[in-house]
Image 1 (cartoon, rainbow, N blue to C red):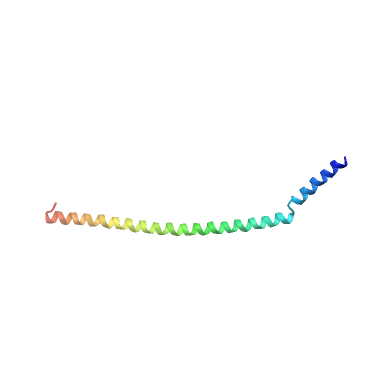
Image 2 (image 1 turned 60 degrees about the vertical axis):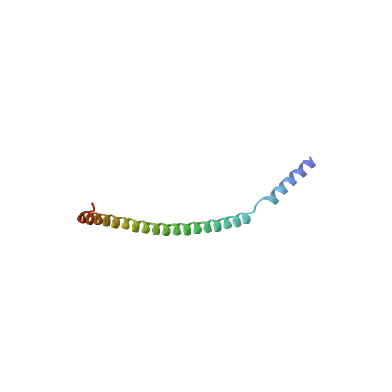
Length: 88
């Protein structure tokens, strides 16, 4: 019986030595919070960069569409000049 009690005490002592304390958990929580906040800031920065890039691409597309309209108008005028000159 005494040997069994001794083994139980060793097991309990081993568990207590490995068990996290409230301070350990608090430190871990604070570290996780800092890490999550850093990740949030990084994501927010990436989203802002992507938003700016999309706005720039959108402006470029609008410019291209504007050129397409100008080209269409020029083609109409060239066609009219060709008809007037007798090339068509």
